Amino acid sequence: MSTSPTGDPFGPVYRLMDEIWGAHMEMAELIQDYKALVEDLEEDVDPDKLRLARSLPGARYSVATTFVREHWLKVEAELSRLFPEDQPSP
Image (tube, rainbow, N blue to C red; front, side, top):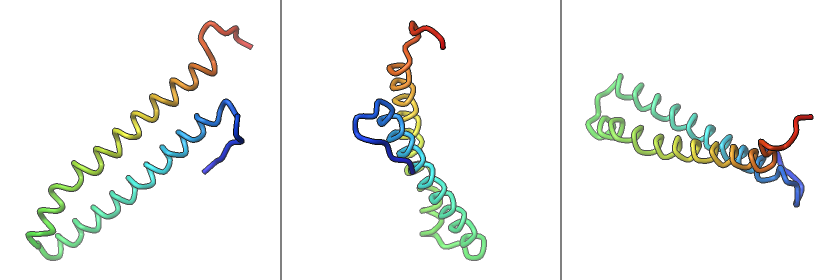
């Protein structure tokens, strides 16, 4: 993860992208856990594990994707603030 000095106008953008990166890492771990759960079910269809497998992906993964989507909108807003459209091109 990157860090930015205090007062850096790009600091919020870097912070938001670091949070997005962290969320993607958590989502990757969720996928790995779900995969392991399905592999366990392939070996032994345990009713409790099956219930868990059917309910988990929809809840936790959806929350994470919403977080990422909202943070990308914040990044876009920060970049628009830093580089307004009426600013002349270099």
